[in-house]
Image 1 (cartoon, rainbow, N blue to C red):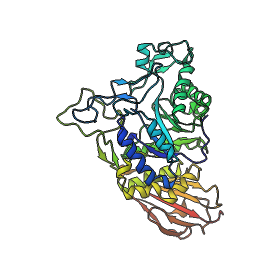
Image 2 (image 1 turned 180 degrees about the horizontal axis):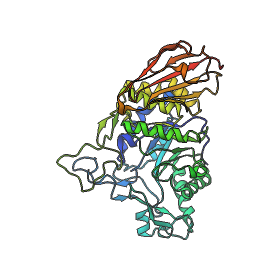
Image 3 (image 1 turned 45 degrees about the horizontal axis):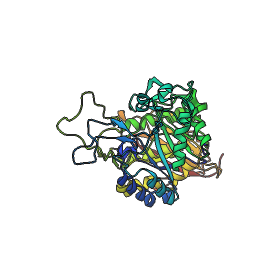
Image 4 (image 1 turned 135 degrees about the horizontal axis):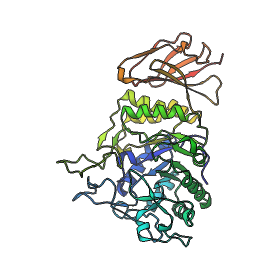
Length: 444
């Protein structure tokens, strides 16, 4: 069974900082840092993303993957075609990491790709609990464009549901609490199959659906069988990702409700792609795509403080799940403050998805009302058009907020009072910048 989450889930995910190359030593170090830095603020889920079952070729004398191989050439499977922890990155398996996570009172999450491994299909491995083989259920025309590990599953075939049942049952036996199923938002029948498998497992497991492109509203009924659904392509440390998040939020806000969270993807702050130093001397294969298994090379987040504030204001008001993706061990005080600011967390955990209530030129105002305190809530005031390089000026009294002139306004990020709505100053917003405002007062 999936779990009802009255507030958006939050935690750490390995993808932005490690791509598909998280290894055992680093995982334990990230877990320790996560416990110290984010857990005291309510973050509670530790997620190992793609690659935990992949067998990589290493650069000589290192545990770094060959730059010619963004995805592994082999995967580790059991006799039923079920993925097992990588012998190269998790030689002692995952159970020790899972147990350590639980001992800290935290939840353990894991990444899965939609479908059945191609290796299992080629070997015609049997499906546990069925007379069928992997070859019998595979839809070889259904493939992921960015990861070659699996084929999709033809859910009309005997053994198809049993395969998903066997995957989830294995993960439940390990003690997995959270499954991020990837490349699945375009495949309602396979979403339904995973949901059924979770119900049959008998373990409360949070189901996170990730993109096979972008989410499509016609599959919303299936999405609601999960707890959260990615509504964007991968989000990274660039301005285009900020704009993409706005567009997805604007459309999907109509579907969001407590227990079903629209996911604007992870938070790519701090040290990123730590296992992918930029290769030298053109040591790359022809046609190489640097966006596979993590975008780009080892770097520090490229967003300015103003852009990171905009990024977090979006996620607070949208009630997006908060999964930090950077390196926990090198998290800066500045980024820690953004991730743990009490007003940001209160807005996010208020569980009321904000909506766009005002647009004028390139200025937008988004609003989320408190579900507890009448006349209170949060505003996001944004400058949406950086190409013009123009500062936007806006006076909140002219934006139809539906608030009393006596409403008190507080600038969250700068921690200063803006007075009451009646005498609030004109706000000047730099391109891609924002004001995140907490308000308190009585409704007209």
